Each structure stands twice: as C-alpha cells, then as structure tokens.
Amino acid sequence: MLTGTVFDIRKYSIHDGPGIRTAVFFKGCPLECRWCHNPEGRSYLPELIFRSNRCILCYDCLTVCPNEAVTRQGNAIRIDRRRCKVSGACAAVCNAEALQVVGREMTVQQVISEIEEDTVFYEQSGGGVTFTGGEPLAQPRFLLALLSACRTRALHTTMDTSGFVPWLVLDEIRPLVDLFLYDLKLMDDTRHIQWTGVSNADILSNLRKLSELGHKIQVRIPLIPGINDDEENLQQTGEFLARLLHVPPVELLPYHNIAEGKYTGLGMEYELPEVHSPTPDRMMKSVTVLRRYGLEINP
Image (tube, rainbow, N blue to C red; front, side, top):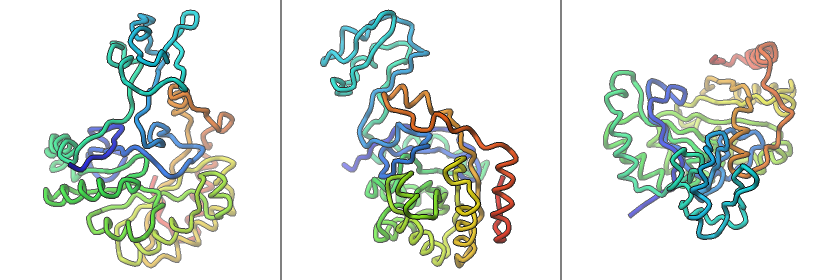
C-alpha cells in the first residue's frame, strides 16, 4: 500500500490557490533555504517539536521517554536531541500539546478521505486541493497517486513547488496539476547555491518548459531584505520571466520571522535573526522594478 509522509493537512486555506482549499503539507525538502518558514517540512523524517510557551510544567513527560531524552532543568523541560528517537511517548502524555510529533505516514486513501470532507467548500468557492510542503515533488510516487485520485473526483489541484526535480519526474506529474505555484528565489546560480544549498539550473529550465507547454503558473517570489531584493536580482528575474512563452503573473511574498519559534521548538538554529520584514516602500520599489518588464504583479 503506497504511503507518504505528511506534516499537516490544513482545512479552509485561502492563500494557496483559488477559492477555499485543503492544503496537504508534504514532509521533506531538498532545499535548505535560510529563510524557510516551514522548518518542520525540511526533514523527511518525523520530528519532535517542543513549544515551551504551552508547557504547564506537569512533568508527566519525564518518566515515559524510553531513551531518557526528556529531562528537567530547573523549572523547565529540556530535550536532548541526540538521545531523542521520536518515539512519541512524551507527546502522548502531554495534555497541553507542548510536545508534539511532526510528521505522520499516511496512505493515499487516508489523505483523500480528509480532502473529501471539504468538497462542499470547493463547490461553493471554486476551490480545491493544494499540495505543498516541504516539497511535494520530493515524494513523486505518493504525489502522483494523490493527483490521480483528485482527478478522478474532478477536484481542482494546485501544487506549490520549488521546481527542483529532474524534468522526467515533473513531466509525468504535470498533466494532473491545474495550477503551479512556482517559487523563484534568486537568479544567479552561485547566490542560489549559497542561500538554498542547490543550483537553480533545473528550476529555471523546468519553469521554461512548463510555460512552453501552456500550463497555468503563478510565480511566487519571497522577498528577503539583503538577500534577493537588490535591483540586479529583480532585473534578472524580470528579464527571465518576460522571455517565457506564456508570461505568468507574479506574487511577491514579504519575508517575516514568524517561524522563529518553530526553529527553537525543533532544536534548530534560526539563521536570519537580524533580517526584518521589508518595508512597504521596499515592497513598492520591487513591484516597480518588475513591472518595467510588463509583468502582472498580484498583491
């Protein structure tokens, strides 16, 4: 039975495609973007997250961990990540939900069953299902099976992707996707490797091919001050998009540090503590640069 790893299924989503949608978050991503706002989606394996602000200091978790990874330090709980094997025992006894296992193995039918609970909202709003992450294309067989199941049910499908995958993989999946939310970070390959850990060669090539084949695409650009909001990168982005056979609309996503607490809860280092959200003036200047290339910029 085909299974995949999912870290969330979010109902009534209104920011991940048209209408009201169910967003299915795949766990695992080949990129390591320094600004990632879903750090729980980076690893392919289940992880333990500890939200200290929820902890009521009942200490029930101290006695159940089979690996003694949960200890008391003063009046606080400490997780030894080297010992933790994500058994889930501590999360099972945490009534405050301060300790939770992020990521669960699900069958295609289990995911589809949750999706089908929301079909009445799709019909009324023109919505559907969005596969996001993490990176959906990192679990291609699972993704293909889910897309096929959605197609047989006449459900609108959107995929939020970095596009970082061999074309042969994307070519098999693309006919079942109604809308691509396609992320672009940086145009210079050296800088892309520096900030995401991977080359952008396949990303740009795949976007070009999807455009040539007439797919519906919306490009999403996360705007991170000091990293990709310089005029040179914006100009290169505008030039590239304007040369596509079917020029897609663009959505600028202002960087925020809301996810910083999730990094702490996962025992990860937040790498951009000094970076702040772009000002409205900075956002407008970026919009102005991109519009010089005749691009449609969505608010």
